[in-house]
Amino acid sequence: MDGASEPGHHDWGPFERPLFDDPSARALSRVGVVDVGSNSVRLVVFDGAARSPAYFYNEKIMCGLGAGIAESGVLNPEGRVRALAALTRFQMLAEGMKLAPLTAVATAAVREARDGPEFCAEVREKTGLRLFVVDGEEEARLSAQGVLLGWPGATGLACDIGGASMELATLDNGRTGTCISTPLAPMQLRDLKGGKKARKARIQETLAGLKERFEQKPKRLFLVGGSWRAIARLDMVRRGYPLTVLHEYSMTPANASATVDWIQKTDPALLRSLSGISEARINLVPLASEVLKGLLAAFRPREISVSAYGIREGLLYEQMPQRLRDRDPLIEACRFSEKKDARMPGFGKALFEFLAPLYQKAPAERIRLVKAACLLHDVTWRAHPDYRAEVCFDNATRANLGGLNHPERIFLGLALLHRYKNSRAGSRFDALLELLSEKEIRDAEILGKAMRFGAMFSASSQLRMGKLRYFPKKKQLHFVSHQKDIGLLGEVAEARLASLGASLDAETSVLVED
Image (cartoon, rainbow, N blue to C red; front, top):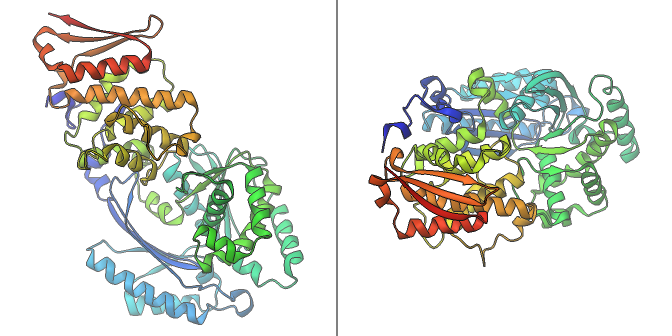
């Protein structure tokens, strides 16, 4: 392969040099984080491209440390035992994985309990793990930073609900602002005397006191936390939504309100059977839904997005240098995947440059999807040929990728499907395509067929690939090759060129230059 298409070449153009080649970025490639919450204790080990990490290991124990704390003032005794056992296991796992010391934080329950310091000392003595107890504002800031891991430049209001507290933080073009912690959380509300009427009054009173601190009608409300994700899962069930990926799932305020009403009048056992949500979580969902109803009424957001990233991802973001934070998580993850899994690492950049004439007037949002597709166009080559197209689609729509909303996932998956297969007739993806417009479906097919043609030159030097010239108004597509390289254009490549031309409704021709 020619040096101009190799990862070490100095001219990266719009791609930029991958930061995972930098030792300081690689140092973040495997990081272990422990989150000791009021409801659960979780270990996450991040691995992969540091800007858009994969989950190398992820284990959660529902301990209920904060159960009853509003009345007793101390941690739930049974929860303490379970949490200590979980932390002992997590520390042993980290040693087995040869991780650097775990970063471990404890939030509302340990922060507010009288025996919180005693619990931290016991954990340190028995496991060697040091728990950092963060205050409410710091918890809100870290959760908001988790949102920024997936949405660089995000603007809106981040809301993280746990078992014993709910944190709010403003986001303004990728920067955190006002951070506040409140007691509006399921375990706190469950222990409140006076039933639903008292809970409604407490929610309204608390949120009314926050209105002056936060923008009304924020552009976006980012929901963080297990109870919010459970509500989003139920929204998917109620709407018959075809894609079950929770990260970047969007709800309109009207849909969210309808789902809250449905939750409040439906038996939790039925909700659990419909959604597969655990019993421990489903018991908190009706209480969380009351809080969400109050949030919607108080702040009136224009759009609601679910973030699977929260305080644990915020801790990873905290360790990143600014130059890494500023990178596009989608492109970094795709580039890492190409380097790890493609037959010809580095060809994705060459393929993008080859196809660029087709996208001269495309908006930036489309260009980044084209880049991502080119980087991923060959990472599933090991799959059986009969299923390679389906594996491509599944990989794009279900992979842990940040910076990618659901319609963009489908677009990327469809383009990659057509990279390996001209027709999608008889595929199992028709329901998912309902998330795209007819034009988006056609554009994804064009991109796929363009990659299918360009991939015919992946084993050659980039300088011998030839060039595309596209004249949309004249409906003409030319492939231009040097005389000495025309032998690379065999009959299969010509057929793929013709297929691309047909998808563009353009006449194709081959031009040979000396």
